[in-house]
Image 1 (spheres, rainbow, N blue to C red):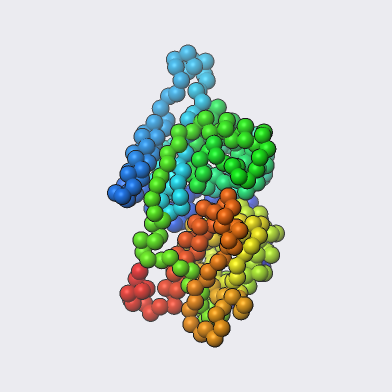
Image 2: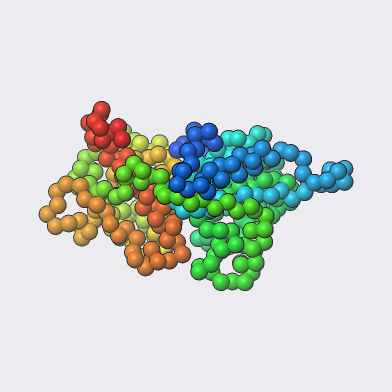
Length: 358
């Protein structure tokens, strides 16, 4: 039976929140050994070596003899992977998780804020403080309050000797630049930056190497037909889905996709407001992490007149949004949605065809 994501209201238990603090399915096999740097961008090989060295240092005693006799650990250092989308930051972060021994956790920025909300700040510190390594994917600044909370959490964990690794599309001392100007906020960010060695990774989006650069939209009838014939399919109208995302905390978007075989979204059109666009970006990230093929159709006013076959979804994010401080975030979402739509299209292609095997 076809259902809609907009009918779901997940309320993950604490056990579920904790169980989810592992790398997502798409990166479950990511290892340092299978990260292939692009020779045209030497920073990728350097980043791989820096991650390898950082992993080797984990678990080694920190501080001098006097500190160890007093039972205190030197504040742990962190590593911060900065670069554009599609250059392998998440692959390297996941590889570090797998290379580290002992207790370690992995999650997105919003997953950690949800955990703090569920446990309370001190309990979250006590729980995460037992880890050797805490990995944070996509440290972003959608909410200055959440960012202040996370920087405080990182300081507490570092003081306890927990190593922290994070990825972002912005250098840690530049987070918030062009978005928020509160002096206290900037002071917090600068304090966090001092705890990290920054590794800058250059390169092109690896997804473009497969030639997938456009978000291919299908006729609405074809999208609906496929959804109705696929067990575990979800079928949503774009506007209804956007309205529903307002009611669900972004940290629960992963649970929203539990047991979804493929997502089908009709009536897609351009977005011009950050609040809708940023929530949709998070949903695309969770679809991508969980490898959920996605089939989309265009709204009638967006579709070309008289078109009966596949079309290309253009201008999903308005020019104003693309000029904002979230530009890289929106570009990443476009790249990932193009890949997901290609996966969705593969479901329609005959098995064994060259396109299906791409």
